[in-house]
Amino acid sequence: MSKTIAVVPGSFDPITKGHLDIIKRSCGLFDEVHVSVLNNSKKTGFFSIEERLTLIEEAVKDLPNVKVDYFSGLLVDFCERIGAKQIVRGLRAVSDFEYEMQLTSMNKKLNDDIETLYMMTNNQYSFISSSMVKEVAKYGGDVSSIVSKNVELALKEKFKELEQEE
Ligand code: PNS
Image 1 (cartoon, rainbow, N blue to C red):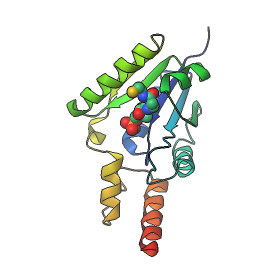
Image 2: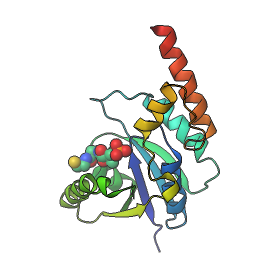
Image 3: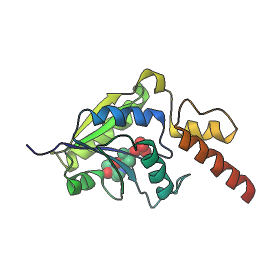
Image 4: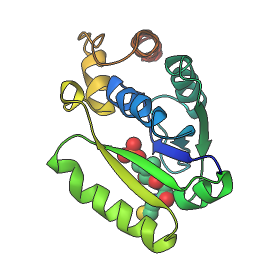
């Protein structure tokens, strides 16, 4: 039987414990799980693509069936290139639903062979977003319970750099 390959796509700017929860649970369901960062040429992130990839690699280093990579262009084309038949997304709240429904419907229209599966984010992380993490970290709030240690340190470092530039 061929191995099952799934993609957990996202901006991951930066990766949070909510993302990690979805990634870990996906690892138990598929042979290979790709954590794939969208490289959006029109939108510069807070962390560069390279920084985001490094932060993810450190955070998933104990998960043997995870591969970390990035893609440009359409997600379904990337899935096809790497042989992934499933996309996994986390759902935090009803407010996520509309956007996710549009995304899934469009992806299905573009490639009917690829299925999108949704996982409810663990309650403990259902309020977390990368934007909120950045906002809290920016003003010196404690993000240690919602991001891994390496991300917490990287946020501190980045805000310090930005302050020095001002
Ligand atoms: O973490 P995000 O920002 O919610 O992730 C969104 C992502 C990366 C999954 C989505 O924007 C995406 O797949 N972009 C690639 C372009 C694409 O294939 N769009 C789908 C049709 S609109």
